[in-house]
Amino acid sequence: MWSSHKTIPITSYFVRDYNMVKGPEPVPPNRVNMQGGFWIVKPHRGVFEELCEILRDGVDYSAEGGWGGPHLMPSHYYGVAQIQGLLSYYYGFFRPFSSVELNRCHYNNMVDNPNRRQACHGEELTRQCQDCRYTPLSKIRSIHLTLCQKPWWCPGWIKEVQCSKFHYEWHRIREDLESLVKAPPQSASKQVNTSDMTSVLGRFRRHCRRSGSKGYRPIDPSVFSKLPSRSNPK
Image (cartoon, rainbow, N blue to C red; front, side):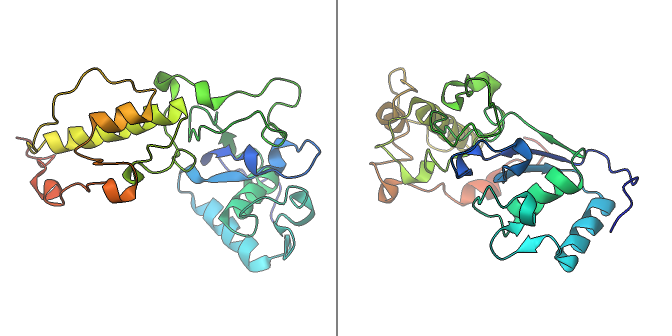
């Protein structure tokens, strides 16, 4: 359909969702879906046009296996009929050398447990899985809060240490934002154990009055109108 000699530069950086792989056998990395919650893309007209042509043509699409047809069907992963399947097919088979898979513990860290049969499929077939739950915060560039749950749910029931640290950072950033417009200061508290969710929520009790989404106090919308302008900082 397209010339195999056509050159496409690196335009995509992504992570794969190994936990979504199903089945008893190991799956090669290019059969594992891209994680839909994280995608760095450099706009490129040629890539856009090829994706449109793939959508219009529909040759490698099936109702059972989604995008990729026989190439990706063994994975049967979530989102195979949507953008996760389309991009996995495009970068895994159609333009396999035009993207870069990033370390999922450093980018889009989900605090997932790799000690399950599915998690290492295709990722490290001969080595022990990397456990993102123990990645130092200094090495993490972005996080994905699906498993840790949302900070505005004030989830005091979460016991995972890494999740507690993520929530602490989220509330700390919110507090920094509020401090830019001289919001009421946080009540004084003792040193926080960032590894314990109860301690974290206690530190930010102006944000979370109690555990659960009904205990959350949203940020005052007027904060955003009071933020100093970039072009005219106060």
